[in-house]
Length: 268
Length: 277
Image (cartoon, rainbow over all chains, first blue to last red; front, side, top):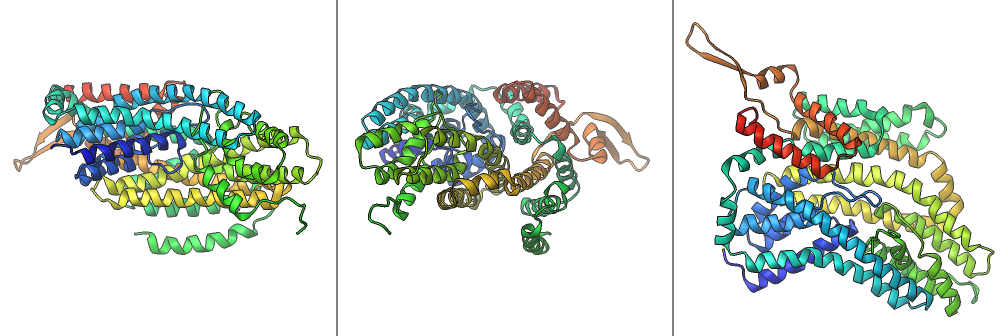
């Protein structure tokens, strides 16, 4: 497919927003689920965007920046893999193969951007001395622009320079056994994200709930909503009965009533 | 209200709330959210101090190292604004008191915010959205976006107002008391339970290696693979083992990206040898 000028402009705009989202971590625009969907919408193949987004979201589920530690970057990976898959008419498996090296590259770029930002921090210090409010606002927002550009520029270059034929012939060079292997691996590479969440919680004494969730899921066909409700009910009961919280147990009693009612409706 | 009493308006608080959405814009490896926190405080400092010198002193106070789960900045910002307001109205609030307050609230709020937002709310809403998205449903991303952001924005706004109105004493009491501890522990349980479910339901490992091929007297061939045997034992057993191994490796400071590439290598080699499908 050919990409129109309007599409290029929209891709750059969305990439900038996604780049900003990757550092802000507020609206979650940098998550594959959102970023891939938006690119899919622009390129007129929203279904591919949504499916690739969902697939990559499972892989990236536990990727999070805690403190100053940086996780792989989902922003650049989501945007460029979706462009290449849709324009080059490739499979979702190829999309995953493209996305992972990009997430490592994106991680390097965001670390560089967060180092450059030290400059804006120091400029902000000077404006604080002068009580220049606009200066402070300006420095803060400029730092955000660095993050916007670190995704928008690569996306722009890929969009204008890569013709569908070039993309296809390049990706066709990946041997079939590698694409197949990646597809197989994408089934279990998701555990890295799950493990990151489990480790972050740092609550070894609550691991029984993890095993309980596992066994429940292995032997039932409950959906995620049901798991959410059951998990919430167990959490409330646990907190209520836990001797270490015994002093004021009046408030959660009301909460458990409503959740128990939800349970009856939502379980199937 | 006395003419002289300086007080933040609802509009100031709303402006600060809007600014908290850009909390991490100038995230840097030197002082993390220092400039971000100062940026949040700009409307308050503008309102409370007229004199250039006081303004500059106040801005400098908030250029110090700061870091918190972005969705949890509300209460710290609210309490800090309340203390600045007291100071601007002549109360004897030392500069050091404001700084140590921020540092004091940072740790406990990260302790609450990280498990709730990154350990429970985001993985669960994202998994829900993604499970719909892989079927091609646009509702998946929309649902994820709405669910996560409604909770996040509510936490920012109500946290800010709560911190500002109740002030330091009440916030400290609650941090020291067990309400937040209860919420954190509850969220952790929910997160752990759903992670367990995800490991079983959304991890696919298949070992098609044939153990035996028996042709029965009726001529039907029964092929038993390693996977059949494992499934009889417990579906998802390999996924569970792999998760526990990856948890251990992550604790040994092997980076996630290394593990991801490692697992991809396992996938490629395993598939080529016919051990995995």
